Length: 314
Ligand code: SER
Image: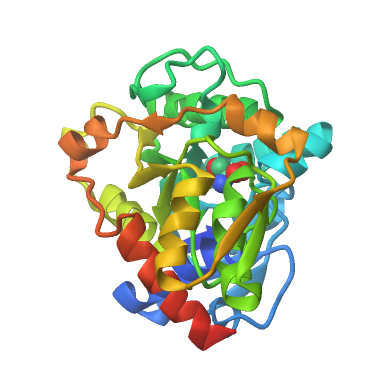
């Protein structure tokens, strides 16, 4: 049996992507790996192996054990922790990616890894940011993502590995909490709205960033990986987004569903600086044209769903 292997499977994207792929292809077909176990469904509902992504030998052994035909490499440090520990971030994000690409090359497997709006920088056009444009990020996370886009393209051109990637915006979900993203305010705000009816934002008013609801992000991964390679002009990575808003706009939307909800501000200079270096809104035309990218959730629909699901959860 040929299988999909996921690194970082118990993280923000992985804990939902693992379940989605198991639902689509069967539980036994999807091997979840992470550096440690937890009590999530992604851990308990199918094959799981401990893999430290900086350890190539174990990664290849696990891939061979399960006869892996697709490697989905999700293990990485997000933007704020990467800024706090840049050398560690380089080693983990780039070392892990290199090992995952090498694993895919050795197994002749298809390859996916998420890139990010963090790959753009202050000299990138801020509005409707094109697919192909200036990329001079000023964060370690962004440097890792640009280098990652290039490296994954290199593995395609040089070795013929079928590498594909998405430049994700902030991802919003009620399932697993993100670990230290700049865009995480847009997740925390929903939790705090349900728990306390108010939220103090570390991102300042007026700051626009792209966002996407997790179900749309998961569909985008599946659609991209199933896309006809003959149609792909780009590979690593495609701009994708569902919406762009600032803290006031998401707060106003939440207030429609949580009467009396209020937002206040206590700006974190580090994360604000990161946010200010990123686009206001990116253009996803290439993804739409080359593999039919689309989304179901806008701010209004996502907010209704988040609040309903979090009310059940909390
Ligand atoms: N959500 C990520 C972060 O803020 C961006 O890709 O770090």
